[in-house]
Length: 391
Ligand code: F3S
Image (cartoon, rainbow, N blue to C red; front, side, top):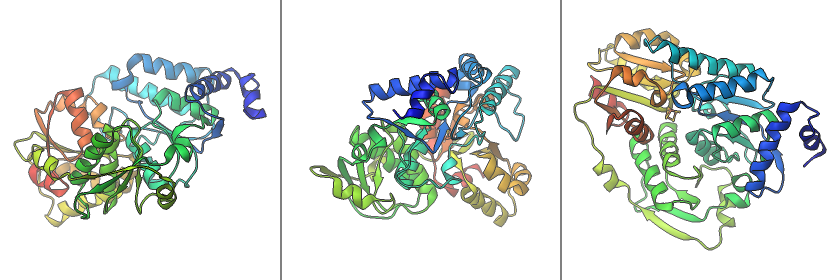
């Protein structure tokens, strides 16, 4: 440890920071870290009242009350309520959710309430971070070559308070060297988010704990986001290197010595997915739709003279993207298209209020959690096809 870290541990920067650093050091011991590193950003997941409940609120309030402050740029994941609209959710849920946001704010966390903060940040390669949202972890590792593990939410808070993480595993170049090469049986470009998601899941299931070096042509940010979110849902570490996308991918490829090469054909898995059938709602935005994806929706409705969808289309998005598209939110709502601002519909009781039996999704991550947490049956659609189902 540096002299500064030793001083923190002795309590010279306050008891909270000392306690937080103790946790980080203990985790570092378990991971066999050689030292601590300074992190440039932290991103905290697990901030919905739906998932952490009263115990989680009390933990965060306790921290905030004791004067804990983050010492690095820190953002937070989406929550269970919608910042843009009152869905008539139970009062105790809304209050609990607000207490969480207030506690985070008091600690200096930026309430971005987005699971795609990487769309508004440019992280430098080979810099250290502590993030805990799996899709975002996969994205910054693969697209920015920014170093983070998939940390549990509470640990990320301690890392943010201390501004440190243990240098081990994915926070070292050696720990990031891929151990297996993954190719497609036939080389073709993938620009469709559903196909990309199916491929991400297939790779995670094939490689398990191995770290894949993936040779695949992904076109456009929607396909890339879906691919990585789906992979991260089924992968234990949410880490991969993508040829021609990951900065320094050549260095990683050169560093690989003995390794297997596997080929994957995701087409069969795509055929097996339940597709169009009677659904009660369309759920999009897992991960959060950004300005680009929302722009496609707006252009689609505008070009057809704002038709009314027969079933609701719910789209999770960040406050930042919603603000950019603010002139269209009301118009879309008249078309039965509802932006859920700062919300993750997977960890929100909004779904239970709507009480759908079957929903159309394009995200394999959404399908995975909707089934488990809400017992809603997902069928799959892709891009504008999802909108057409609703119309
Ligand atoms: Fe984001 Fe929630 Fe999906 S956090 S990735 S919208 S499960």
